Length: 183
Image (cartoon, rainbow, N blue to C red):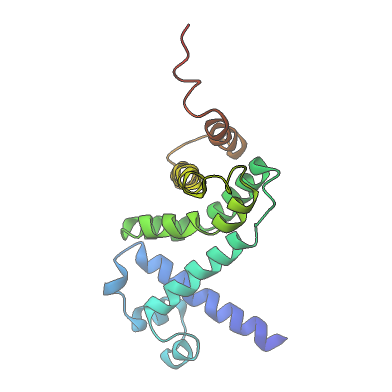
């Protein structure tokens, strides 16, 4: 048990050190030596856990994706699902910031949008009649929702989480019809 905690601590320290360094410069310019110096861990210990800085980054993003995958739901309460998703993304906001700075935002957004696709489509009315329309609808909803949530996570929208979730949920339910009502 003790060694498991030490392993987790070492891996987390190396991951946090990489994210901190990525706030200063791109991943391609970060060396193992710099990560170890920041983490106060020797190089041989680094190589016990990871093979490269890229592997460290992959472990961080995969950890975030695992947390998001764990949120799979029957989609009976989309608002609750969105709220829990926001909690996970907010917890990983520093990672998201460096991914966006490193131009990996679209790849991350794309990966997140596909995490729940199959489960969502199983519960989407009309999938059997028109799967292509259902998939297009899913992509539209998730890409837009992810973009709004990311901007909120990064501090571009200064509103409480529940207000942001209500706005996104309202757009999903009503589209832009509320914006184009005739008086």
